[in-house]
Image: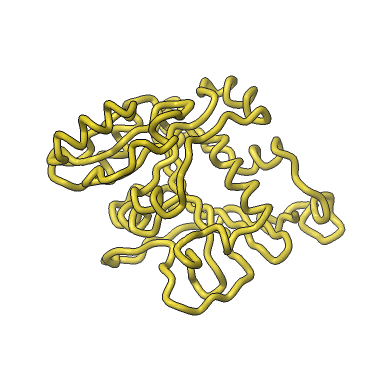
Length: 261
């Protein structure tokens, strides 16, 4: 993998990182969370998404077909750095989400950062219509969180809690308030936030103005069709401006990082 931006001595094709696989330590350093706010303890929400050249975020309803080996290594790195992974209920259903696992390569790094062995998974769901017999709920290394609204059905809350999930109320009605969800996770000591979508959830986070960073993989593929973009839902009144902070390339895939200006 080679770094294209910011420009360094390694940017040229003859540079040190042009034709070799980066180690987990190098990837972790490249994607480290910023230290910001009082003591660096304010929540920082980053998204990790993949898109084809023609803007598709999925193929046949899943993101895996448009991904690649290095993209999956970065996916694992971002999870290895996070306190919690925020995901929409429909993505849990479509992608077959499983609990995050402990990774030996990140054990020392997570311990030094005061983190547990693996990130928690936090599922955003208004209806709580989920299969609570799945391993995500029955056998996670860290208890799965469910973010829902105050009007969620009591019987569904009871079923979720009986399965071992921890229910967090983050909205006054049926839905979840994105800003309140971020605050609620921060109040639980979860400051390094990562969302993997799907598009509906990412669109809600963008519209609420709570997304701090986007890690976007551009896949060198064309799919046509009517697949979703990486973010859906109503458009924002004024487009959100983000700043490019990093760009890397391997096998035609572009790995970018953008931060809110």
